[in-house]
Image (cartoon, rainbow, N blue to C red; front, side):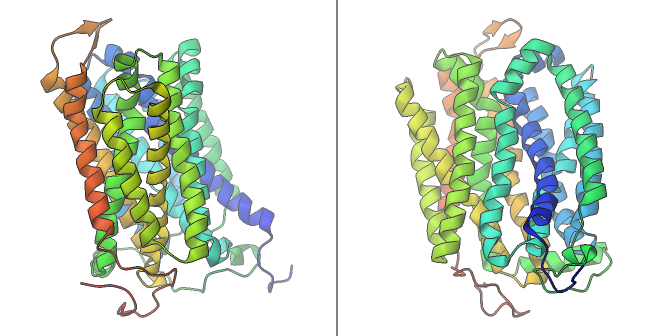
Length: 438
């Protein structure tokens, strides 16, 4: 094998593909509760607040894992992270599938969230070494597209599987798939093309042993850059509302107040996620081509905000208009993936994994806060209606809870306005003089 050659495309895509497959399962678990709300509330005897908290347990651990994941991706390597994550997620899925009460179900959800929380950052870290740098934002969008595929599968297909077999057998099957993915990653994926005898697309970097001191040092470094904490807020305000609505409250909201079936409601929320993926890819390609990050994300945040307001606050919209607005939300929110390229370019390359973890943490923070918060508001506004052992919430209750989504969307729009454009140039100076700082 000629060591002077870069890796062949099929091998690079294979390495990326197994990581993306694990990310697919992460999105599947993220939004799966949306089509099982009635079964979960009935089986575990919980209300909206309990269901919201159950959904958020995924995000509690997911968010907490982002900081060590970034450091470990830099110093330990993405292959070990991805394999360990897949096996741990499989164990969590088994625990959830066999749970007889909400406590072990929450624990299983907690394990799943923390385990799949390593996927995105690790896959992006692989991408910096197996692909040319100019494709980075495009790969960010493609990776998200794979994740969205998992979310779409957790819509109508999962609904039919749950109706046919029950939610527990379906979850047991999902655990088996995760075990297989973990084994494949362990056997095939490598951190760098040099481990297969090829040249890497990233310059060699010295690895330092992971330690709490390393974590503190690198975090203190990345947060000295103004772009990082502003984009942290942008990701929170863009991604949190989408995950909350598509992953939990959108389906019961549509079925209750538009009188449509769970299948149709799932199709609409899946449309939101598909458009998010499409928007991510198209805007990633456009951003790489015109060498602009800030302006595209700003247009995306404004578009999402202006579309969220009528969807959440105006009752009885025509279905065609509702779907059009949902499409606009997805396309606008897809701009959040450009933030991964934006933050990577805002710091020296050696901190790429760390800063990706920080940004991903911000993106998931909204999804951690919003589901239980909206559930709490719904329970406060509940008028006592129960159908089939499940609480039913009126339109006024949903509108009160959804105000929080509007607030988060406004936050992202304001934050992006204060960032400094990188023009797709990588920060090289250790002191970061070529990017915005406080």
